[in-house]
Length: 341
Ligand code: ADE
Ligand code: ZN
Image 1 (tube, helix red, strand yellow):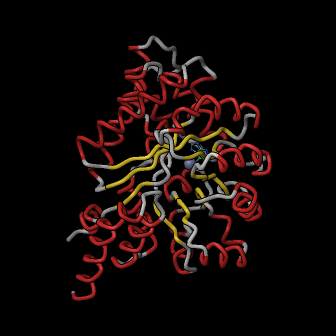
Image 2 (cartoon, rainbow, N blue to C red):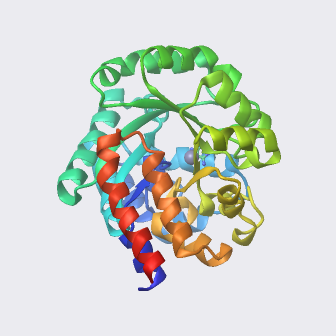
């Protein structure tokens, strides 16, 4: 079996995906036209040409500009459904996706419009492809904790019945350390929500440690910088703390010099529960299958290594044990057949 087909055949979860980061240039241009939103681009090619970044802030500027075209619940639904179609093509069985409600409410789009549109897209994607899903609300860390609290209160009805299962922290890591959001994450913890945060993408190992300790995380988004602190690596490995690693994103934002220098294999060799994810695939050059292919080729991952990555994604998900079991059983069967081959 070809490598691409082997990767596709593995049951996998995507655990680090910003739905606004799946906005393809074609949809951006179409929604701008339909919603009469002024954009500084005259064609799909001009949009694509603007997707050039050398660091996180350059990307975020374009990312926030791009989401301006999302106005109606149907826009959010169409965006999400397009992602679910891509996920199915990559053999993904479960997704836990992020959204940035403050990026929408700040420009006058009601919280319910964005949230319910995304939830509709997830539900339809589930019916169409049999993919299970969970939604995680990310707070923008360049905004104040108080602003985050206002969003938290607005989201409470969606937390209460599980339509949103957890909270995360994204946007500019530099200058916005975990401690800035200690109170907000304590409130989320008290509400029984799952807790994740971006840490160690452009920040240091200390940022990863503080995120785990101060924010009481269930999972770390990126976490690359943890490798600079051997004691922290040992702790995270012993705790089976999942890291949602994003290889093509790391290359595009110059977190690593090139894909051959990516630390994913070192993470696995150190016993970390590393997973592969696509972050903002429309901006970073590929969806989940592309990320898997890139690291497989550049880092020489074996098929057993790929099974481990798929298993980490299921184990690191927020599914319960009964929901994980059939996916893990399928992976065990693949692992057994590899040993026999
Ligand atoms: N928002 C969307 N993608 C992000 C990333 N990779 N890092 C921080 N914030 C983000
Ligand atoms: Zn991210």
